[in-house]
Length: 173
Image 1 (tube, one colour):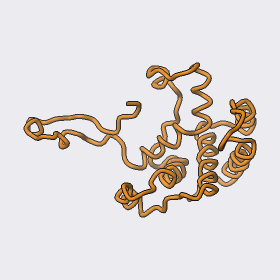
Image 2 (cartoon, helix red, strand yellow):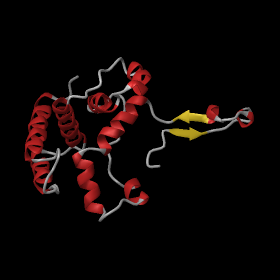
Image 3 (tube, helix red, strand yellow):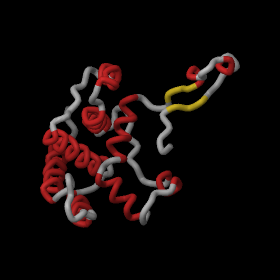
C-alpha cells in the first residue's frame, strides 16, 4: 500500500484479457526499489518518522516525509541498492531478480548482514547530507528498547564508524 511499483494503464486491448496483467506498467526499476527499501528501513528515516508520529504512521505523514530522491547516477544510488538487494534477495523465489541485478550473492550470515545494514544506515546519513555532529546527535537520541536484538550500542558504533569511512572515501562498490 505504501509504495506502488506498478501503474495501471489499460488499453482497449487489455480490457479483454483476464487477468489484466498487460495493463500494469512498472514505475520503478529493480535498483530504484532497493534504494527505496534501504532508505525506508534506515535509521535516519526511522528517526525522522518518530519525530512526526506517536504510535502509527498515517499515509499523509509518510507522503510528506523528507526522503532523499536518489536516481541512477547519484552518489549513493548503487551503494544502497546493491546492499539492500543482498539483504532481501535470498531464497529460490528471488533467483530471477538476482540474475536481473547481475547475479548478486544474497547474504544470510548474520554478522555480514549486520555489516551491510550498518553500511546502508551510514550511506543514508550521507544521502540526507548530514554531518558528523548530526549523525552523533541522532544515534545518541535514537530510542532503544531495553533488550535490543540488533540496534545496540555496538551497532550504533559500527554505523558511526562506517559513516566516517564513507565521508572520507565516498561510495564505492
